[in-house]
Length: 262
Image (cartoon, rainbow, N blue to C red; front, side):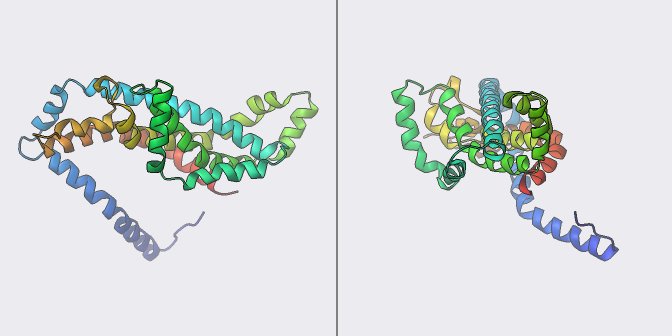
């Protein structure tokens, strides 16, 4: 890891970091200021008075939790197989999986809608959970495989010599070592699931099944366009994610750097 030792280099690094953060901070500041325009904090009260905030929050939490569970289980197992097991053609399957990273989400909307309608999943949360989780698995597997590659194979061989089968090696020896990359995967999946917009917009038409990212649209219709309400709803939707990221920031950065480098 690089370290700045002189005062000049520290000041220069701070200036560069500040300039890089400004383009991201300005829209957030504008959003908060806009949410307080006119009626001030009354705009937030109006969001609460819609009566749908808790329902939308509950649905967002359910989608995020189940998406995280699916991605975590699938990623940990797949990365272990791609990294440590002798599987014929595993490199072909790995690169085939990575090809999914090139697929834009918008291209998948029509097939997803047809599939959800065919299996009677439309207006159900599972119609959002499965696609959101599937879209996160390729990149998460890439990170996790790089992390697994850094685990010495001698540890696995020693466990096998002691009589452990491959499942016991994975569960008792390898999995406890993957906490840093697991934290990064959890945070990345949480951000993606919480901020999902296109798929919930397509799949969830029933007000009782919609999510927080659709809350701003509650203030926009054919006859109304309450932008202060839209911005207040956007701020409320962002607050849980900001809190979660700040709480997991240390583990996220450590795991991401560990998974990005061999």
